[in-house]
Image (cartoon, rainbow over all chains, first blue to last red; front, side):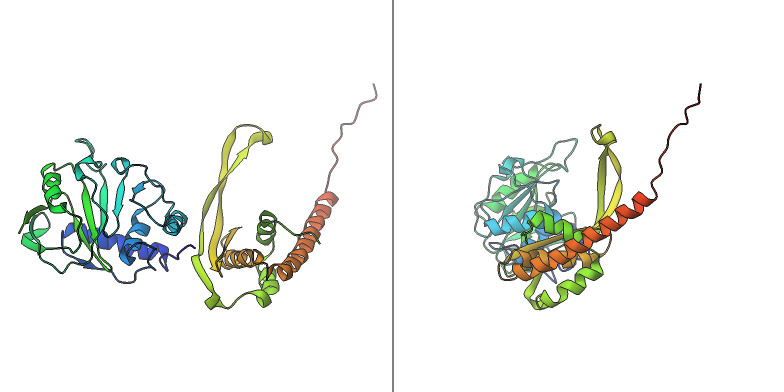
Length: 191
Length: 145
């Protein structure tokens, strides 16, 4: 059974795109997302909004295993193309509780085209705990941040990803109704 | 009465005037709350391709506006695509398409289709007559030599 997407596909997805840009411009500052579309089976409501906004027929998505109805809905609304391997995908979707593929194995771009890199869409429980201290472009001084139910070893892998700058992957952390951006330029200290 | 296939009825619905379609379908359409709109009517452009002489290489003839809509009624998926920018026409086709796949609604709607088919054939015959009446025969006078 297919799920309806945004009420107004054009304006709602543009509004959502603005939220994603703001999230990446102000790293690790959770953004509230109003007016979400109905949730897709197996995913959080905010994840559906992010997918409808970012996915089209020109990019590929990799995800561990999605329910058939979710794949069918995404194919109907945005022409989803699934990648066979995470290493080749433009977007990596990790639903809550998935294991993290090694960040170093994902597309990181090249020196000439650092933009040809993968973006990780990572579902988390909430942004209420306090785990790390972040600094870098878009953060005045430093910012405390934490996300519930992050995949094991995420922050350790993030250090290596940040060290590869300007190459590397970017991450969007998604909770039920909030979104936080983590671009590769952000330096994170655990504890 | 022959039962129309989905391909046939989608073509027929798209080739019938929207006002006539609304008139005939109105008594059979479900309550708006029973319809889940997956895609409300939207209008875009589609590139038409042609082949010179019908068999030459492909070329882009031009763009036409096309409206489309998709809905779900009781688990059945209906799609409507129609030439032009009339979104309500596309939404009517989508609803009729979903209902026509439902064994409960199909028999009454097949009768609506028969009416539409007769009207379409009549319009086409009329058009053909008008065209035939304006036919001009060209011939060359042969000089008597």
